[in-house]
Image 1 (cartoon, rainbow, N blue to C red):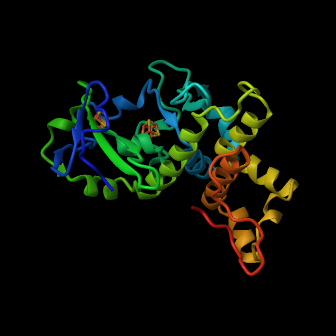
Image 2 (image 1 turned 120 degrees about the vertical axis):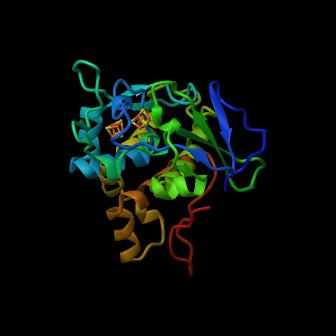
Length: 267
Ligand code: SF4
Ligand code: SF4
């Protein structure tokens, strides 16, 4: 759901995008083509890491080692991750080639969304999340002067944003919970925060942890459901984010073993 209400503040140097179409077209004919893929402060969300590590056919831990660096998150209580730019002149994105983006189908959500930015809020407890979109105005980006126009819906479809937005919304809720400082007393990088980091950012490491500690045994799953959670990175991430919130004392979003009931239930 996209909302135009003014309650969500417009970030500096942005303008709110509502239901009216906006003009934008990025294509190889613009003279700025690929210039924006250099020296980018590009935040990576948990689902971005899954898409990219699968595109590159490497494990999530290998991806983190090669391509990510810890940075400030959206609040002081949990770190963010950003993409490491290549150490060469102009600091290009490591996935940029002369022909364009080599990971285009699995590029991070920030790249898909640009020149827009997206934020979400829950206006009242229990109410559905509301999304807000804002237009950036970088002078180097000449796509704004093109004739093509999109509505938000068309842009989301054109950039294949639905899955990314769905996972990013789930992550936003977990991150909002982390902002309540659930590590109280343990401080930064204590064992529980390290476990949360593994769960959110290193899905293959988390899968090994789940298997090693029999985490799924606490939930009434049949073989297919169990295989699904263990084999599908997206399902495992959804489970992991709900699980980590639950064990840290947040919302109970997973149902444990109960007689006559099967499955993992996400609230
Ligand atoms: S991932 Fe692709 S679109 Fe995003 S900055 Fe890198 S090269 Fe550009
Ligand atoms: S600066 Fe804008 S128009 Fe130019 S390549 Fe990047 S997104 Fe496209």
